[in-house]
Length: 291
Ligand code: NAD
Image 1: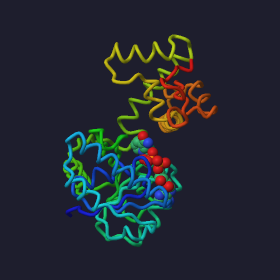
Image 2: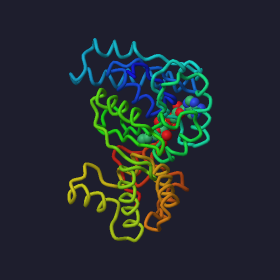
Image 3: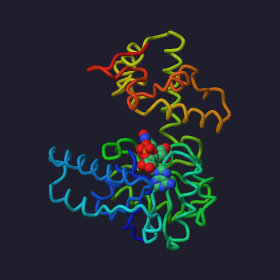
Image 4: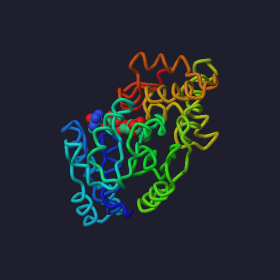
């Protein structure tokens, strides 16, 4: 089935980036959120981010105008009924996602593909509670969506081949690259990235290095564009801890034990850039290490 109309549930940080790339690729986009403020903020953010691409000569002003005209918003989830593809990008809470799929179900056509942008929740479990586990997949975009080349496609145990193939075609039309992953905790990127970040926090916790020496070591010694602690602040320390907990519980291996220092920062509300403090303090002109 040709996919043309895409419904996005959740217009936050990820939802607006997903709407941005789909609209530029020529899809008709309908964004849904429970918050009117999120929807209007998303439209402003998309406009600003595409404008930046126009300034850099990557997108024409005409393509921007066409893309913006393709994005519609709605506070009513039933309005997503006629969509060919649904991408759920709402808050990372299983009960929220279950309720969204349940509310959507009766309004969808038989061929509509359901996907979730979850970073950690089992695709197979989310799928099992819908009326179409064979047409359900994980569609995991990276942050910031317009910039990052990779999309992880995650196959639930019941996902059928036609659904799998359709989503690979969608990723190609977006001009992005798909990595295929089976449905195990944290998929591929976070399964590898988060233990590295957690190990960097252990290295700090045990006094092997300071924030500065750890980040510099990985930047200059392993050619990483960002140090692991700087990256953790960018992702959000609460998100890093949540993913480590999913790995620890889901794989039952002590090697995924979250570092107590990571837990301590989250308990302090020092969640990284979004709260102005994490492994660095962002309240001044330049970030200052907090340890
Ligand atoms: P966010 O907090 O920025 O946005 C979530 C949005 O969902 C909010 O606008 C909220 O109003 C909306 N929402 C909540 N309940 C809803 C409902 N019932 N119906 C419709 N909308 C609802 O969160 P985010 O960072 O955009 O994350 C969204 C999803 O993307 C999560 O599953 C997260 O794990 C995943 N993800 C996040 C990142 C990241 O780096 N932030 C990366 C990859 C995947």
